[in-house]
Length: 263
Image (tube, rainbow, N blue to C red; front, top):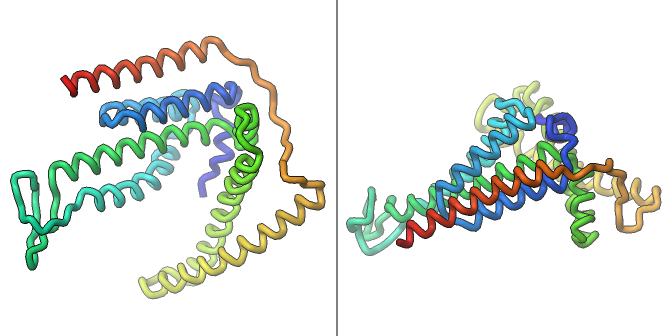
């Protein structure tokens, strides 16, 4: 299991102000989502890969392994968008298609373009979130949200869900190792059975641990807000200038490409 929290506490950008990292990640993500241009999505993916691997010092192998998870999920989603179904038959806009009983299923140029654009845009947004999670500990992200005056309920839920994700991943990993050592995934039939047992066990363990967590918090005077100590940081003018230059370049590039496309 990949220890994302470990990389968040041990990277070359660890001592950069969390507001600077959050601002860089969020502004870049909004630009990626705001402009339906594949070029901007490609630039964002490359930019974030350079920031994570080059600047933060996260190993390339680890980053590619992390990106493979959303890559597979988004690829499956994009394929469902690319496939078109119609009863009007095949025309010039179709790349390939099969007609059965008057229903045509296949690929169109517009469908592929839409699916490809959505895939790249989503992958670019995920890379921005990876930058933030791999370079900034959860405690500091919580402190950033408090400074931005985000409602306490949302902050507490986000923090608890984030922590529980790693708890459940560790539990699932332990169960998987235990099942594998007993040939629980030796065949398709046993794999399906083991997967069902793992899902049921995770549900029970998640319910039990959530109750234990609430009891532990209540015994320590929990009143609806988790107070944590975050280190003090100094805002770097050089970093702000660098972020402004990068975001301005992305924005100008996107606007010029949009104007050229319209023209």
